[in-house]
Image 1 (cartoon, rainbow, N blue to C red):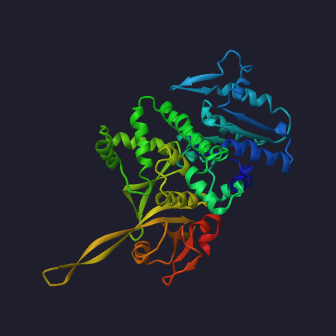
Image 2: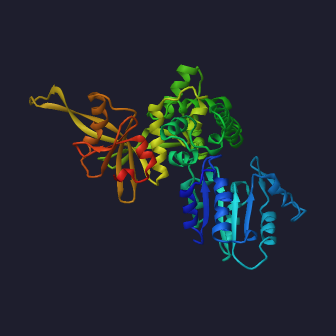
Image 3: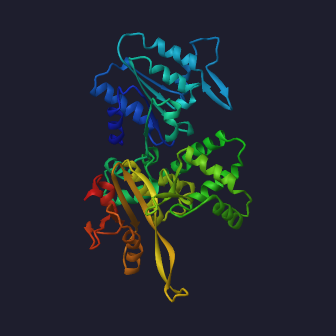
Length: 442
């Protein structure tokens, strides 16, 4: 079992905070297991809570939904709303009232809450009852970070669950660190995938999740979309991780490589839908000296690298791009806000002006990541290897152009022990970074 201790501790810390605890995340990343098994076991075994005072209900589980049939029998248990069947909120409230008649404190652990009719009003109603602590999971756009406070009127507390980090996978796999890395960078951190007994079964399970869960969800939510173009856009983006993209570039790829016609506005909608489903993250570039964001082009990283590989049927598993995606996810796992950095500077040219003085041109260099958390900030470069002076200059040059005092870090997969360069950059092995949550502060 993968213990998910980081997220369990987050749930423990936010108990009784008078807010609706909302666990968000990509489908199949382990939200239900975290809430209904790990957290439930903590409440029963460590806190000694009577199981009768813990109400677990999954709104995508037919067996749970059938429990509501006997309440308000004149009303249907589910209703079709905008093409989606939602659970009758009045029946659910009657069920809760019937099962919380005893005096005492109750924990509500509610799974896939977006499938409940009027779920915001229902959850807010529990906040007016002093003996309820509410924890829910959700998997779609209604739970984007920017919307939790809006939906719950400032009374929502969001915990975003990522797939297994490398360290979580390593601890649960009983494998050598390097062997575990080879497995992880190919199959990612979706628990159901990694629990399969063989590489073949892992690949089959990952591809099945993509087709039968993620793509099907997208098609169900957006029934008027062109299904072929939707899937093809997802595949094109999966092949372009770690590179600068925008909808126009994807449109051009459609025309040149696939001889398909679509428009960049449609592609922009697709990308937004992928973000809303937590499949991927659009990461803007940040002008480090100018202290502002650059809208386009931007980069895209997948929430799980195994799912990215499965979208491409495991035909394009290039470590050079994947380790960048992996580092991005690890930084988010540690609670950082992450941007792609841009350093702009002047370069002396061979041309002279009318006063016979050299003309300078504007140039820029990319820093893979700018990671910030509170007062801390780190500039991070990621490389598969640095085996010659040209590659060294390519990775070091952007960091040399930054003149502030925040820490500069270079992560290299094939490096040995960590060391500081003469410029004061911390250079370390990628595996050391991934297996030590405090490694950036060495």
